[in-house]
Length: 259
Image (tube, rainbow, N blue to C red; front, side, top):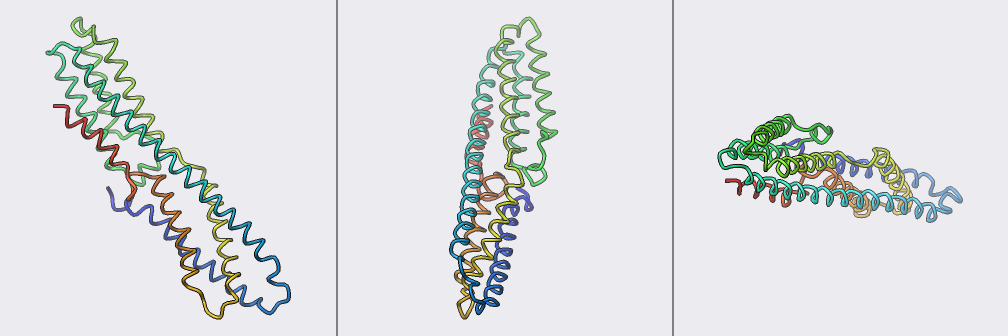
């Protein structure tokens, strides 16, 4: 795991925390200037409530979507492992003398796949292209399988082994594409705008206090920033502390069984 990718989810959360504190202070200063203005605080509670509700709705929407996509990716990795195990077993249908090159190619393919999971970085998350190492290993495995299945001795395995490999490649592709699916950036822009406007209203509402209520200000900023952090972690697994390593481990265990 690269240092840059490990710290990636912290960046938007920290930026949101700092921005919220700035807008809280901005709202407070606006409120202090208008303390003695008649009617300046009329309807503050009604306006605040609507903005806070929108912020809560946006946070809940993005969090629920991120959690659902995280669970979907785990299921796809599990499906990939299941198909890989089936493919490995179906190599047994080949004559013993034809199995070694296909098994070696299968091991190299799984190794490349595991390595691609372990080396995910910010740049990898921004692209939907399959890593070159995985593509080469996949092409080599397919070539070896087609070669042995094209012989008279391997003809019996052709109808089961080759479709199983196609299914494996499809499962890997589906999981890879799922990692590139995220909400439109407009959703995050709207969330940030709503949160910052809400911070201004919060600062305006607490302007009646003689001193800054740091507990309240830091609490509001920290809560929203924490939610931002968790959403970023779920949207980009394998890049922070929220990991899919447990389900990835099933593929590692399968590779260790390929003796």
